[in-house]
Image (cartoon, rainbow, N blue to C red; front, side, top):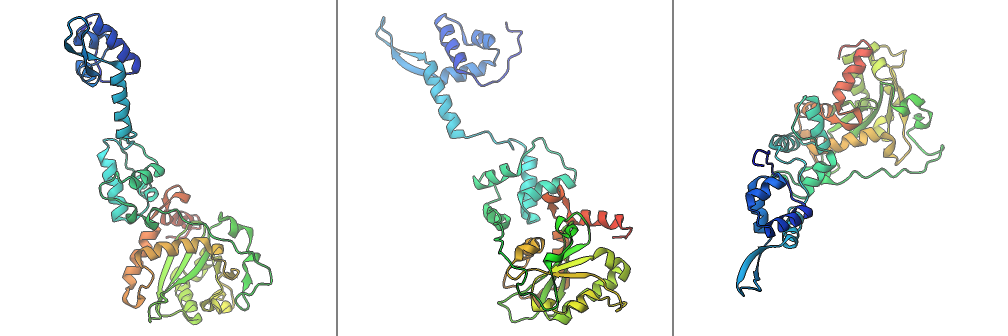
Length: 358
């Protein structure tokens, strides 16, 4: 019997009943351990768990005995106090990676797992995004609280879609979003962008950010601009056209969807090439009034920008280098919707397909 391999395991209620019967037959702890095929320390712990004092009816003396019912009750109570086993268990490397990534890269649990995937990291334990959120909510991480998470762990609220009519007001001379081709709506074709400005209503400065979001890849272009005047927006697009080249610009910026802000009112100049004013460089579409959900990608990224530059930021005190750093952080952020690729990776793939060096 002693040649059998002994293991550590959790005893069942039936095991406890068998222990009680074997004790009455006079078996010793080691013999019981052999029969259960467990380590002898498991039996000793079990005997201590079910131990109680009783009066011997023959000798009228108190004696120590074992009760399977007492042992089972204590075991179940211990399980309730302990709670469910943590999937992350003793995988301290995974726990440390999740904490450091969320804190240092200012990202969500989903993005933290995305970074691990991109970097080719492997751990002993696999864990879901929902489980990480649960552990954080329960305070099981040493250094992460819900306050450290984007939106403080709250779920993103959906947009309220506003019922619109075809004759609703929009920027003068602008073409309605209703006329956009299906390929723009489906996000399957590269080269369709959304454009918006981010600024501070609390600050006296006129400086702001011009933000462009490519709908398929979610790639960001963020430009620090001196003001939100229509001619300034045109100059910013002119600069981008010169950067990419007129021919490539038309391939990369097939359309741009904007809201009804006055900064986008110079439609003809936005659409017309600065290099060759006789040809168009892009097509501009205008959303319905009060319908930010029609530029959902833009709005989502604006929220990410606010994590680096909160509302009330004085952009006259923010350098172009800082904005470039924010842009790089957003573009290298793993996206669940892209299979945890970053928008930068997806953008470069699309550029290569066009034969353009990114």
